[in-house]
Image (tube, rainbow, N blue to C red; front, side, top):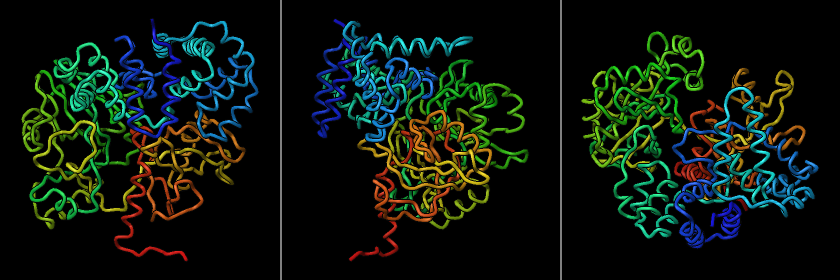
Length: 564
């Protein structure tokens, strides 16, 4: 018997009511083990709030304006119900559920409709994503209407969350890895390794269900399927990095560019962004550079793409992001904003995974494999003074700072640890998400130009406000951000518009202060936006846990204000 989508909705309702990670894992494992093999990956993806496997390049391309209009059509309800519910919960799915529950039309229809299955939901999502060309938007709307018309109130809650990418159940990928291991009786370490290599825990679940431990042991890299990136923690300064790693380490220029993962097989090359989306079409000169200089039959490389001027000097990050967005007129844009590629790692070569090898050895293999492409500028030293001179050279050349890498470190897919450290000689900027905006005054009338900046709670998925700012963006950027915010607006409160947490910005500030004004209990002092981070998703944004850690570190050199 096919598994119904309502079983996922009911599971997530139970998960939302428990704070026990063990219970969440047990509930999910029991659910997964009873699925048919072809239901496992779609179910895992949907539970995590994804429409498709993480490696898939398919997108729904449906705005909130269209989705909300369809919800109104399907329910025939007073849309004020949605606004009231959203105001109380701040949860877009719960607000949709409230609309369904108040809809007589939906209550009557559900009695006569066949329940949705998990595979029917996946097929509908695929059809929506595949709709292209003339009349595609009308087709997407018909398909969404048909799907939502079959949904019960609780199913609508989670369908809307999936459509908007706003699951917010606190169900992390780490918990899903534990659930998959428990469901199919395979070692957790093996599940995590396979998830890193395949880039998707849903597919790992399918393999664990169909071939168990042996199937996961056979997992390797798949060319043109991007894998999770190794991430770095922050070090305050050179001395802190040296103390952390102990002895000699590799310092590299940290370029003000965009990280890319490059896959090559024979004569085909694809370039993936930091978000693991396919950017090949936008970066033809990067593709050409790899084809001309990398002779290996199969290889996965990592590097940084930097936008430069005619003299080869780095230019601001926002110009680089325009290149990544461009799919038409690429040749003209390439002349106007030339790009330079610097490589810094190699993960796979001619059938062999290199990630277990020490970093210093991978670097040597990289130099041999891509001899015609520059590697990141590097210094290996244990002397703080020498490293400080190298840091100054990086800053003088227009770069952000340094990366510090432990010489013996393996490449840990998807992990953020202390094997790699990033050193920036400024107060740590934060990548935050715009969750609301206010209309401007005077010259900024008609623009959403005062932005509420929020950090993600790693435990609950909630976005917690740290303050607001109108500083940092150019007029052209404000106009563009206004357009984008209007497309994802979920609640208009007159002067203030609440939006889906989609747009990430880098924010500078002078200090983090205590503040009873916000639920986070913290606020940024003199916050200003330094750039829009279109290379990052809301899930890549900084966490409230990191903000609290920075707040606490402030008192290493200053006293605390004590209240009576």
